Length: 462
Image (tube, rainbow, N blue to C red; front, top):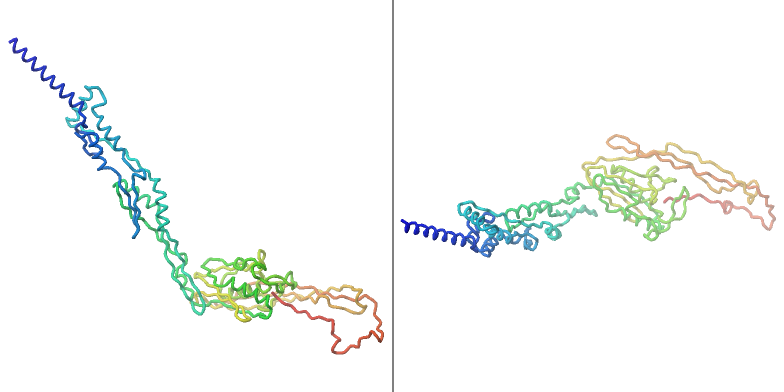
């Protein structure tokens, strides 16, 4: 009996020793314990290096590729700052059942072997800011501004088709990249593109099919300075396209009227007086254009008449321009674009407004003088003139008030009411002594010389 007890005790000791030895072997194993996963991938019974190789092949980021038509761009995601902290996860897996005392480590291991799994989540590092320079590079390669359709008119109307523009939709691209990288580690991204139509299309320009308003004036082509100014101003306001709602400024189109800009000296009207100045003749171009605009039914925003009626247009239908002071401005109030042609041929300057002839009714213009204001007369004593004699120093002129009308579809409307002011007539009255003629100094008046010394007023308009 005693021997049996001894044998039993020896067996228990041996079994216990074996259990301790086995438990110690399990705890001190260099393999990751059973029941441990990294993001659902089992790393049980693997060394740390084996586990690292496994998760690297499963979870590592690769390359991202952007494509658009026949172009592509490829970048290494790791270099852009996208990676998983794989080593950290493997270290955490390996340390399970090893970071506490023997008994607690053994308890964790037994629990795992009994089916209590542990899943370690990977830490994901993302640097979406690194895509900004890439987006810029792609944008510069793809983006293309639209090209407007163009029109030119010579003997016929020619229209050049516009070209659509392309633009990378950056916000959509950012969203696609984030979504793609959340689902796969080596995505291929189709670059989202926005198309942009040109502001001016050929469809718009095709509504320009003929002349809806035109006017021609004549000038003396032998006056070199004036002719030069008319030609230069005309070229400045030629080939102008106005879209619906757009406004035109004559002064903006010509720029400053200076010698440096090619303009010459010629007679101009300043404060009702004709004198030599730079740009004489420019107002004939503005007045010609003004009349064509009225016939075309455009809305005149700013315009003023001269102080002296012009000879090249009917009264009330001139338009004076002075840079920075007085301008001719008008607006395209039609629902179609208009195109302005202004040019000089021989001694004529012509302005034509092209538009949609099928949607424009004929306009007629008329002007009438509604009042003539007699000029005042001023007498000035002049001792240098013999008493009883009078000399006209300034002939002056009568003032005029006029009204200009337009008629459209039978409706008569006032275009403008203009006032050309009077200019005082000045007569010098002799108060000096009467010169007694001697036979030696006497001048025999004849029909040929009796009007000698008198002058006739000649008015030139700019």
